[in-house]
Image (cartoon, rainbow, N blue to C red; front, side, top):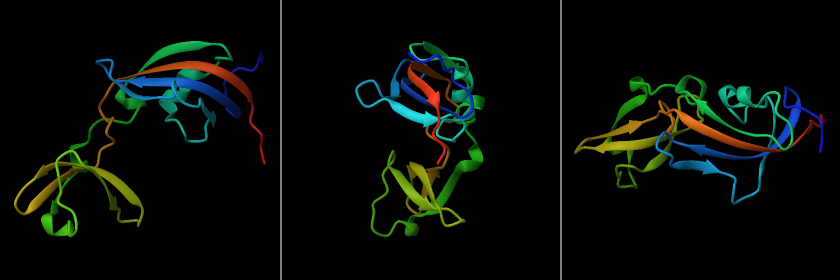
Length: 148
């Protein structure tokens, strides 16, 4: 068992489960490979990294992550009306997650929330925006990250 503690520059291997307020599991590594990442590499939002600091291999915990520290508040300005003509090949359906080109040329996922005769309403907020999440972790290993 290593004596390393989670901090900047450490590589962390852990199992996690992410749940909504009602206990619905959103994501989990429990039945899969554990997740390995480097603290501060951007893989986890800072609000998820913060409670892990100081933990070491063998530790586990459950943390409540508020929207401010998770995926942000739901922003009404991220809900856009698009013309039905923008959907040439596909019949837009409520609940469908689609990728759209953002102004910078990148990809932006959006969820179709309403379909009208001429317009389609798309929500570009992160699906977990505005949600308080429970982040359960079991730390398997902590070691200094290999810098290449």
